[in-house]
Length: 157
Image (tube, rainbow, N blue to C red):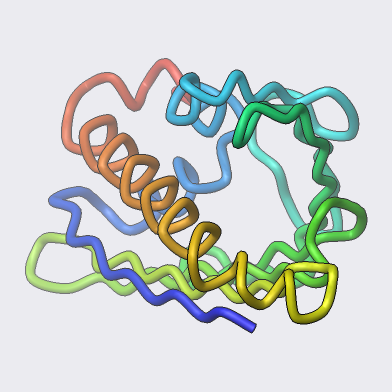
């Protein structure tokens, strides 16, 4: 199993950062290079407690689908999404938000396990970990840019 932790400091209110992190529309904009689209469940706006979204996108040249459910929710401090159905053996993403000094500290903790036993474990370390870190970094930079500009209003305001 792979565990990734990332911290992102955003010069914006914690509520704005929390809501942008659960915006379906912002997710699609931040992962446009993968062609990710929300195709079922909550397909636009803000996803909330116990709601699901099914994503379809292209990773490593392969079209995949991934359905996540918001399994824990404490606005504006924390939410968790976990895979209900998809290509991973297991997948869980915890999102933490802490306000302080006029900014928000956003922390991602992502854990996943690939299928296919030893071959999956090898793929986790050699390919998937780097890919998922890159995806998160790109997404977090997008969240920061939107949150710190007036652009955030187009997502919910």
